[in-house]
Amino acid sequence: MTVLLWIVAASLLGGVLSVACAALFALNARTHWVNALVSYAIGALLGAVFLDILPEAIKLSGNITVLSATILGGILLFFTLEKLLIWRHCHHDHCEVHDHEAHEPQKSHASEHGAHGRSGLMIMVGDTFHNFVDGVIIAAAFLTDIHLGIVTSLAIIAHEIPQEVGDFMILLHSGYSKAQALLLNLVSSLATLVGGVLAYYALQSMQGFVPTLLALAAASMIYVAVADLIPGLHKRTSLRDTVEQVVLIALGISSIFFVNLAVGNA
Image 1: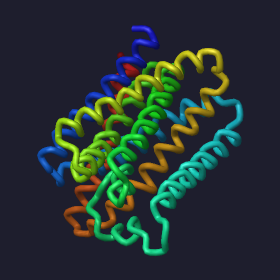
Image 2 (image 1 turned 90 degrees about the horizontal axis):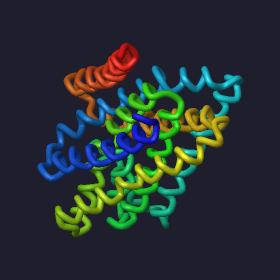
Image 3 (image 1 turned 90 degrees about the vertical axis):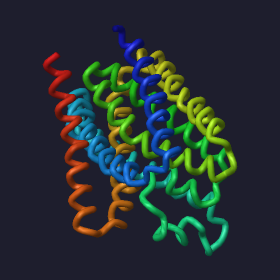
């Protein structure tokens, strides 16, 4: 397979698979499964960052200091973007986002801020942009190395599923039918393919930007895992829940390690 075919396949499979799995969970209200998926997704994200993306970015970059600064800047950028998103929906001191935060069950990045007042349409706009960026990240990874592209795609799929579950719940709560919610999520997922194909042609002539893009991808994944997903785990404080979370995070990391091993030996 050519690099472009890998990007197309990973983008399509990632989008359709994540929406299909999310529909299965959301439409059957398997809350415990969603909580487990979030823990697994954290491990997969962190595993992809520290076992694959960062080592590859360091290898490609001639300046580790600049690379580290890019990651820090990326984390600050994603923090700022998220604060602007929250501010957009907090027009007064009595903010719904913060009032309900302590009472919400474990949710994904999209659902944490979407469940508090955003319309279904707004959810889809934000999710479409997010999927587009995922496509760019997938393309940058595959242009660097096929193995890195596969691992990165798997990590993105892992964290997309709980996010899509949140989107489904918000759309249903906003009055959309199950069929409409499924269709909207499938259409939104096509943005991953658009982002991947556009990035493939753009980055072909700008290979020097790939290490920077990988660093920003790492920053995005670290931020989603540490700032958005991990805090939700602390709301479940029993010993059983804690052990389950640690095991599932370790399983997420291990899955990236073994995929890495399998692809490397193939």
